[in-house]
Length: 406
Image (cartoon, rainbow, N blue to C red; front, side, top):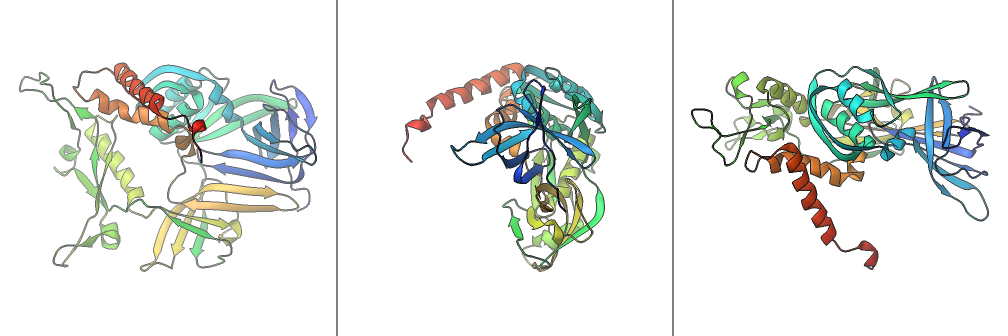
C-alpha cells in the first residue's frame, strides 16, 4: 500500500518538539523477544545523537532514540535508532538483594532510579537474584530471565508528546492464532538453523546448595550438596517424557528398549523441593525438542499475519521421522516502503542478545553461588566482591586489543 512508511515525530533529548523527520525510501523495524528493538532509515536532515523519534505502529506508539548516524559529505544520512528502553543503560544500581520478591516488587526496585514505571504485571510467584553494580536495563533483562516474563514497553502520548513511559511485564507476549509453517512449502528465501544443543528426554533437577551438618544440626564445614526433589517425586530425582523417549531416546545395549537421554538443570536460588520439581518439569518442555529456528518471509505462514511472540505450529517433513514442533515468532523485521514486507524468525528458543553484550556481568552473577559454597559461610555480598575482584584482575591481565595487529 502507498504511504506505508510511518511518520517520525522528531524531538530533542529533552523531549522538546523539533518537527517531523522525513524518511527517504524505506524504514526497517527489527524487534526480538526481550532483545533488539531498532529502526534504520535514510534521510536528508541529520538528527543529533540522543534525539527521540516517536511514531505510530498500528494501535500503539513507539519511541526510539538516535544512537548512530552515518553522515557522508554528500548524499543521504543513515540513521540507526534503538528503543527508548536503551536510556536505562544510563541508570545505575549499586547493590540490591532481591529475596523472595514478586515480579512486581523486583521491577519496582530495578526501575526505581529511572523515569519508567510498571504499567502491569501478570507474572506470579516469588523468586530472587542479586543486582550488583549493573545498569537498569541489565537488571530489567535479568528480572525477565529469573521471574520468567517478557517485557513490553508502553509509550503513552498526550498533547503531542510522550506523557509517560512504563513496562508491561507479561508471562508471554503474543498468542496462538492457528498459524502453521511447513518446511518444504513456499521455501523461497528460507533459512533453517539447527543449534548445537542436545535434546534430552529426561532431566535431573538440582536446587540451592545444602550445608552439611551433624546429627545435632551443627554445620560441619567442607562442601555442600545440592537440593533434589526425590522426596516429593517418589524418591526419583529426575523427570522424563515418555513420548519424547520413543522419538529422541536411544537403544539399550541389546536393542530391546529405548532409554532416556538424560540432562540436568540447576536452579541455584530454589530451596523448596516441590518448587524445584515444577521448575524442572517446565525446563523439560524445552529440552525434549531440537533447538531450531526458521527465518522466513511471513507469506510462508499458513493462517495470516503474525505479531512478535505468537505461537506457530511447525511441520518439518525433511526429517525422518518428521519434526512436529511448537515454535514462536522470536524476531520480526518489517520494511516499510511502498508496501510492508515482513520477515520473521520462528524458533524453539528465545534470543538473549542482552547476555551477549553483558557477558561479564552475567558470569559474575552466575559464579556468585559457587564462590559462596566453598566453605558455606561466605555472605552474598562478600562472594560478589570476591568474584568481581577476580574477574577484574583477569581483565587487567589481558593484552590491549588496540595494540595488536589483525
